[in-house]
Length: 111
Ligand code: AMP
Ligand code: ZN
Image (cartoon, rainbow, N blue to C red):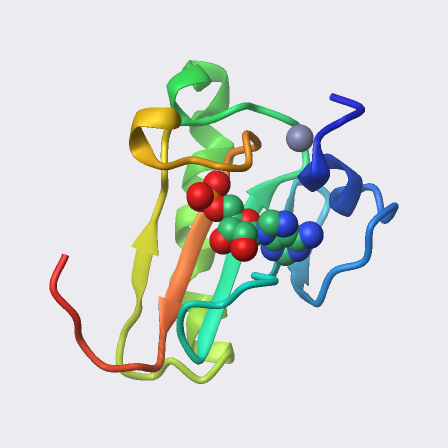
């Protein structure tokens, strides 16, 4: 996916404010935060969205979700956080490389 912005971030071709990385997963701050803390967790391997995931993504999806509370705590969200996965155009997705938004620090809000 040579024209995918998140693949370019994962490859180090576009800079980001990194939160976490390992061989399979990367987390970085959103460039346009909607709350005091707003970062996302992405798989390094490109997949368009949750809609394109299958059994082969079970492990990476689990890893991404299990990282969320750990990284949220490290970013100062001691009290909890929101997770958002926009899926497909109908779900408001703008960047078609799967990502989980981790958002918090501005108090509770309704869905
Ligand atoms: P969505 O696809 O609607 O779930 O959201 C895509 C998110 O990616 C938006 O919140 C953007 O602010 C964010 N974004 C787009 N480009 C970058 C970038 N280069 N670095 C960090 N975040 C980005
Ligand atoms: Zn990608």
